[in-house]
Length: 145
Image (cartoon, rainbow, N blue to C red; front, side, top):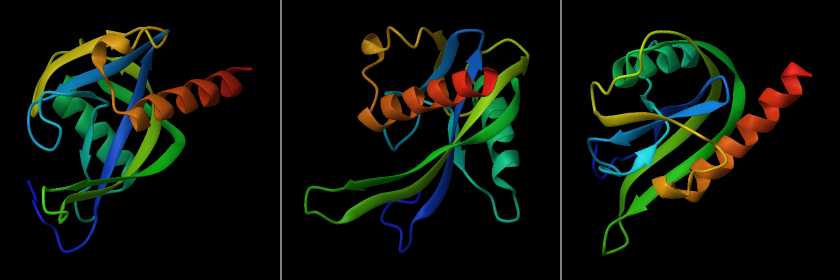
């Protein structure tokens, strides 16, 4: 879990598209347990960012993806009631396309859904997640032109 780390941890978020839908997972563990988010997780020592993205999507949603370009880098800092840093992740968000498999919740995901990017309000996403999805859509559309 890494509560109260002595340095930021590197996490990888993946904006996965299948046709015109984006993959969301409901987190099963802290931080943000119970909240909807992008699939992803911590990078392992010696693991390349792209490999982390593929592994985390496979573990959390049971699908294979083709990893694409960098979307953005986000700082996720959560403080406790006294203001101490409880979690600090540097999140590297990547664009990916579904390749194969049926999305099912696994690992630390409680649920998965292919959501319509035009109707994300029911998922009450973190504002940075919404921004990242918007950036990914623009990058995806630019790439396919």
